[in-house]
Each structure stands twice: as structure tokens, then as C-alpha cells.
Image 1 (cartoon, one colour):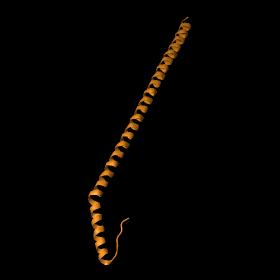
Image 2 (cartoon, one colour; image 1 turned 90 degrees about the horizontal axis):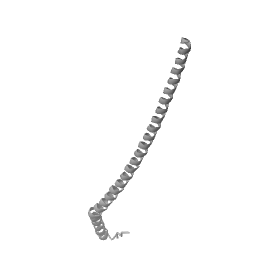
Image 3 (cartoon, helix red, strand yellow; image 1 turned 60 degrees about the vertical axis):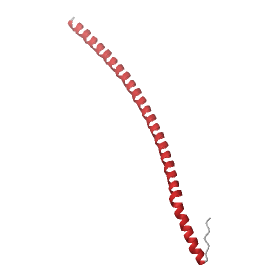
Image 4 (cartoon, one colour; image 1 turned 45 degrees about the vertical axis):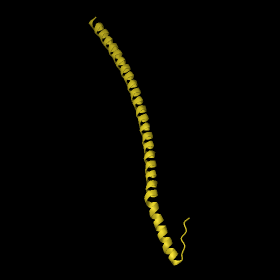
Length: 105
């Protein structure tokens, strides 16, 4: 009778152990699924932030480039153009004195 009872208790222990292991596996699987979902959500958020930052960088770059180009044009207009005119006038005077003619396109 004791052996039968011991065998029955062992069977109950195995059954209990299997049920506990199954429950733990299910909980771990659920947690794994939740973690994967959270990681995927964070990955998408980071990608969106990265794309937003890239877009803002490109906008700022284009703005800075346009400002630089405008500044370069202003410098050319204000400083280089008068120098070029002086050079052309000086060259025309020298060329005129020698009988040459300087024409601008």
C-alpha cells in the first residue's frame, strides 16, 4: 500500500511539475511576445525620429547653403565687381594707348 501511495504521490508530483513548467513556459512566451512588440515599437519610433532628424538636417543644410550663396553673391557684387571694372578700365586705357581694343562679352 505504501508503494502504491508513493507511486501515486510521484505521479502527482510529475503532473504538478509539468503543469508548473507549462505555465512558466506560457508566461515566458507571453513576456517574449510583449518584449518583441515593445522592441519593434521602439525601433519604429527611432526610425521615425531618425528620418525626422535627417529631414530637418537637409532643410537646415539647404537653408545654410542658400544663405552662403546669397552672401557670396553680395560679396561678389559689392567687392569683386568694382575691382573687375577697375581692371577692365585700366586695361582699356592701356590698350587704347597702344591702339588695342578690349571688348566684354
